[in-house]
Length: 494
Ligand SMILES: *[C@@H]1O[C@H](CO)[C@@H](O)[C@H](O)[C@H]1NC(C)=O
Ligand SMILES: *[C@@H]1O[C@H](CO)[C@@H](O)[C@H](O)[C@H]1NC(C)=O
Image 1 (spheres, rainbow, N blue to C red):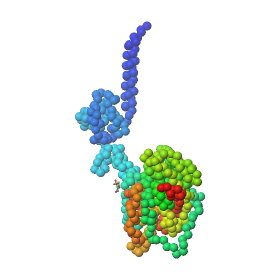
Image 2: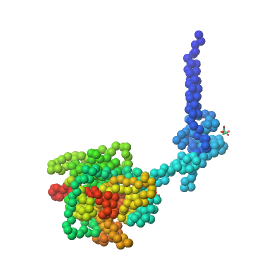
Image 3: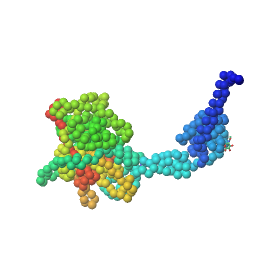
Image 4: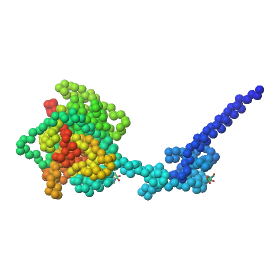
């Protein structure tokens, strides 16, 4: 019986495996689709040249990533089914490629390869093999046609391109920039507190809270791409009212993040929340200042977990509470808890809202935001019909909440008078500049009036004015106010 020496057997096995391996490898490479059937994409790209890579015969490692797949710089790539890198012939063989370059697409004087992309505002455009661009067709938040239509339509306000919104879709604007959940009918049927206007009582034609209460009215914080206006507007109104009702003994900017992270009951942080729940939390748990617990969640990240609650409070008697945690911001030690009394709903009459505002401070208003509001740059806003002719997806709206700080009126060229509310919307925490001399009834844009949390570049230096007395965008339909919870000790020891 012939016995195979062990060494030879090993050699044979090795050889067999090698052959098998090569065959398997070749099979795999041949099964891959040819790269150059309709011509060479990215004809100007440097691949073999970039790596100085040219291999003889077959060398499967002689490969480079190419437009989401792999190309080769070995001689084996040049066969009926070609998977050579675009510059293989030119760089490795010194001959022109046997496949013509595919067309690519032109954009702003540049040729893009097939599958190349660019962004047209909020839409991605992709170069197809036929040499044509194909762009997504999402309505964008900043829409030049809408801007033109508003500015030509003489609606009493100016539209423009707010750069923070450039590149966002309208859908993203509605989803990430608002964030108040419309109250249920049991909440909207909440008893209204009717302020009684004394017969013959006349309210001024213009009013601005920061002029009556200098240094006690705070600029709202910028909510970024956090759909948390429920927390921002609540914290903003509470900050002003605690300051006013403590006669300036306490002037905290209250922390929206404390509400976003810790008010979890039926609330969704940066994905939206309820105003009644926010006021309940401020009353029963209280929040710290924004310096103590700064805003962190700017991300429009719907999948990720909300940041953990970093602040808790416990009762100290008589309904007051104190913090049981250090400030999340390590630079700040003062972790006083601020609370309010139960929120109350105002009647929807313009005069009642005005009387509450002038007597007790800024109020919180629900507001239905439509697609054109994101374009506001100045003037007296009212929802325009410019999108009525367009397909449904261009007409979107969502619920927002804002702080109203004042009112005024403006004389129109035709002799009519247009009344408005004012709301601020800025990121600056600087105290307001000293108030100018009492403004005439139809002054230029006021120093401050409705407050919105979209940053200082938006609107009239971070404020917007909206038509008053017509329930424009529902702004007079659900208006809330509250008293700061101020004890004698708060007035004394500070
Ligand atoms: C590469 O392929 C082209 C087209 O099939 C052919 O004309 C050329 O001779 C080949 N070059 C080599 C070096 O095999
Ligand atoms: C809008 O603003 C953005 C950012 O500043 C800018 O890149 C864009 O070109 C502007 N678009 C128009 C149409 O003006």
